[in-house]
Length: 324
Image 1 (cartoon, rainbow, N blue to C red):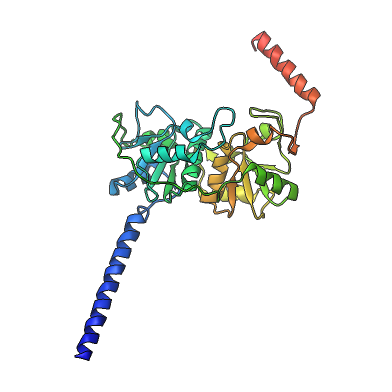
Image 2 (cartoon, helix red, strand yellow):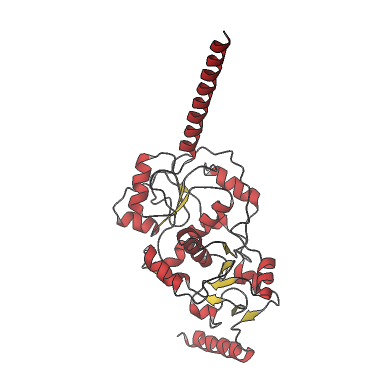
């Protein structure tokens, strides 16, 4: 009898273990990204994935959504993910972002493909900035569509003008600062010289020849790697080409890499390429960027002299006066 009881116990344990493994396997299947999922998806790759999985949430962040969009997609205009006009790089309140994510039916395990209109390289910054925001909110499976909606339509893939009803989620995100660096933290690394600071703006902004947010110039100690470097037309280059560009950058080793621009928009492209595609560890986005940094008396390089600023203003005034 004792032997029989032992056998029954062993069988019961095995059954429970098997059931547990099956449940665990089911859970892994539910939470795993769809086959072929990558941080950067070509339009045809996304179309294939969507054909085999109805769990993907596609969101458009720029463009005329009502006129045409990817079938089944949701409208998530870029300004909803940004701060106020005086500091657009800053983050909206987490409560606002939570309401937005829930309205899009997104949960922590929802695969989300982010689509921009694809009008120019800067437009892709809308998608990469939203990608960075969603990742910081705890969404695990994210992708940016290379070339955006323009590339989707150029590939002859289906479009729609019908707006689908989306059931909201109850997901409550928890913000993580793992991929963000604050102004106070940038002040520290600048004073210590302990980070690789990369200005993602075009060269004219880096050299202080142009300015659209705060004072002209760049953060002290920064180098320049324009976000435009990564593009062929309006799509990102192949991975080997991007690796070559990164390898040629002067500063190769640093415990922290900080990507910044004027308002954390173009810099999000650099962050996406370095962090998500090239695997550069501890790459972070300075979301507020120069719009906040240059408001106070913080150390800067490439600042033009007052005489040059006055001369540029005078030339601009004469140019407008003459209509040229």
